[in-house]
Length: 151
Image (cartoon, rainbow, N blue to C red; front, side):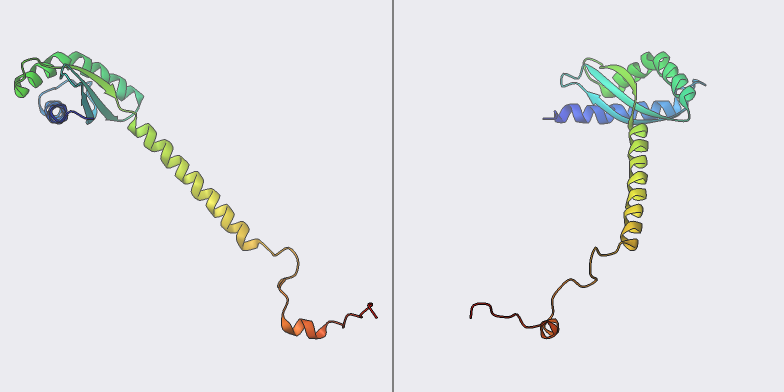
């Protein structure tokens, strides 16, 4: 069960951090960052901030270094804007969402390819045996009568 207060605090932290990264933090190492999620413990003492970075692995590493160096400033500003008795500690984590989405996209492409292969096989398929294996009344008239051996 999610604590409603913790959910509100997490949402507010997400807004504050995203705003700060866009306007106040001027580190050149900071890439194009999106704050995807914030999870706060029930006692509001710790917040895990998840982010994604547009770019390659080098951009992700430099952004992580910029966030580590700016954590104190960000935490101070979060504390001022939240107005809580104790400011939660912040930990930044690179979100695995883009990699997960890419793997799901690859699986969907593979499934679509397999579906097309099956459709092609179905188009080329033929019945095993006669084209119409069912007996019809007109077929019975053409059969020879069966002799009765019980005489």
